[in-house]
Image (tube, rainbow, N blue to C red; front, side, top):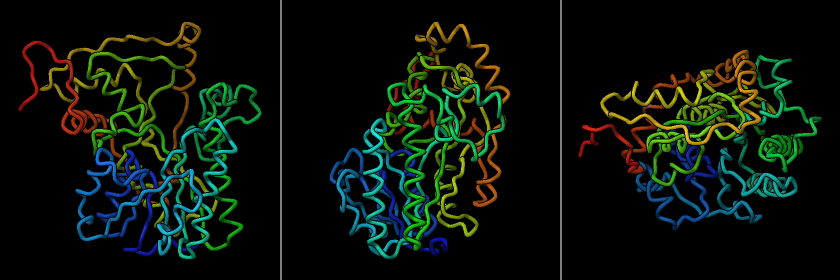
Length: 358
């Protein structure tokens, strides 16, 4: 299918979220008309920041209530749209039938629109690699889009915490199969890594693990309570550019998926130390490790670190079809810290003699 036309109309699901709101903001900056889909358009805590964006007063940006659980609620919203950025999360990934049903609700509305010719679906790097598949990482350390977590691995069950990655793989297949059957639109999947960067609204500080982890560091503590893996970041602004680039690109085809990450990696403890390196004027007090990896994982931590250190992260495919350049992690961490303090009023733990500037 053809890419969306310049200045066309794009619906964005999950528009109040961390990624979705940046997609909205950057689409507006590029001159598109945007229909922002949120759970409750009358919730000021989650939508007032959208109303302050340029384009809202002139109705180039409109905000719509839409619940993924309700089939048909996107019908009127998608009517006349050229593209859909389906960024929204579902309420649970542990029920595969539910994931299928929610995908079908979006697909039904796309088919009814008669105008949508491209859907970009937000997946996750978890649909490409999984902490459950360390043996697979040893066998295939180069991380490209052709990787799928080992679906024959008996440990890959929702009960073992793998519902999220399983649900993301399922959604990709459901959308691409539906698009092929329809023959009038295509579905491209974006698989972001660990989103980090500036939040646009106070409620977003708790909407993802990475900005929340930095918040806890600012407050003086951090934890490593899961299986070790390094942070594999993508700046949320670059992630949004990737979504838009996939909507615009003439070089992509139905069913393809693209990893969005900077290929930089960093350990949690190093991110913690970065706060003072990047913002020495802040005078941040050193954060304390309050919850280490489980003991059974501590015994193998050196092994885990060694496996991940051998991995070769690649992003040349998404760069080749979108032209996106990825920011350095230092910029993302700095901007995340400053937005948590200025937007969400996080009060960092500071050393004696330091204070925030009024």
